[in-house]
Image 1 (cartoon, protein in one colour):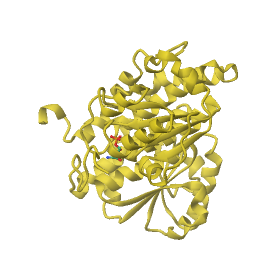
Image 2 (tube, rainbow, N blue to C red):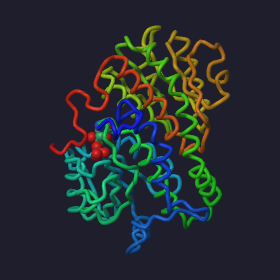
Image 3 (cartoon, rainbow, N blue to C red):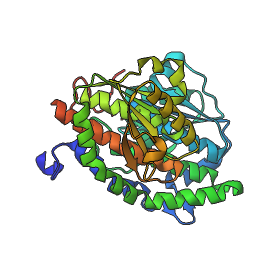
Length: 370
Ligand code: AGP
């Protein structure tokens, strides 16, 4: 086992640091200057069927659900097709409507999650086109779906999913580029994202240099009982996923919250003790996040702000927040960058608090029972 971990102490740590490589393999042979080529969707004209769908339904659990949520705004923008999000167990509990005119995307690292597979059976019975996005070639998900895309992130061993998350987002972005490739009005936007994808592994290498800074931040949070993470737009999913990582491995209560909902309840929690991470990197929501920060500061909130490089004084003019500066990339790819400091934070918090990083209490890597 130690040989497989190489120079790392834990699989989670190794998998976090592997992301420049795993993202490269996810994109290998698929991202060209002229566009995106996804062999698994070309066959039998699946792309055309997806384009004609009345609705896209993204289905998954845990981190895989969060990855689909991160991709949703961009998929809607590039395809013009509405996307409905479904947690697999909730879709089953509600027996929610799925139609023949829908395309259902099933996102699962393992391809063996029971709830996701039962939701797949349900969508197949209801006549939807079913597309699998998985890391596991030959898994039940990849065998039972009509078509799909493997994320090719390499084997993920740590129970906390890290490199699969970033590869799932990139695959969903590639799917959006492929489905939207017939639209002339978005050609310039698509081209910008394609060049952003090519540079992504080097941007990820850069953000990984925050490792020591995240360890220091973790040591300042070691005794906290709770941690909130506020995000919106592309980075609402980052808030959910960052909080999920902290709670599942560091065993610290943590909640990801939609910043737009802050005034509708969460604001009551704010005081000088509760640490709050606010994600405020550059995108269309930036000025709204600046105003959220001001409102939290006026309630004496203990803020840690994630912003684009060079934006420290723009997000926190008073200098009273702790700031994490990350490289700025295309808005729809920013969630891939922004989750990495939070993965590092969760990892270091876990080690410092003395918990088992790769095998968190009560959890299994793949939840194969309902
Ligand atoms: C991720 O850190 C979790 N361990 C968990 O939420 C996981 O993502 C979920 O169980 C879904 O697994 P899957 O991607 O293999 O379907």
